[in-house]
Structures are given as C-alpha cells and as structure tokens.
Image (cartoon, rainbow, N blue to C red; front, side, top):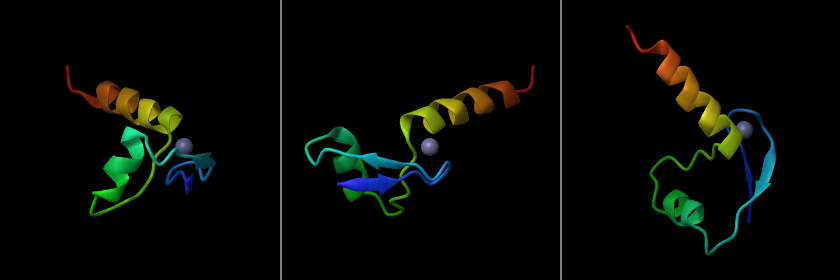
Length: 51
Ligand SMILES: [Zn+2]
C-alpha cells in the first residue's frame, strides 16, 4: 500500500501487516506522516516546551 506523507508529500510504501497500517486503518483521520517527519515534529514539539 502506498501512502503520501501529509507533511513532505513523499510517497511511502506501507506493508499491510505493519503496525502503521493497522493504526491508519483504525484512525478517524488517516493522515499519514512519514518517520522522518514524525521525528521532526517530535523534536520541534520538544523545542517548543517552555523552560
Ligand atoms: Zn514526510
């Protein structure tokens, strides 16, 4: 199954047996975000934390 990353627009192949696929299938908002962008978002969120 091919999915397009919601953030960078890159097309990524997702195996139908993968956790990611199961998660997207059961999601109300199946917007796929690739690993690289997920990591970037996570880092950005950490950087936004007030000190
Ligand atoms: Zn991406």
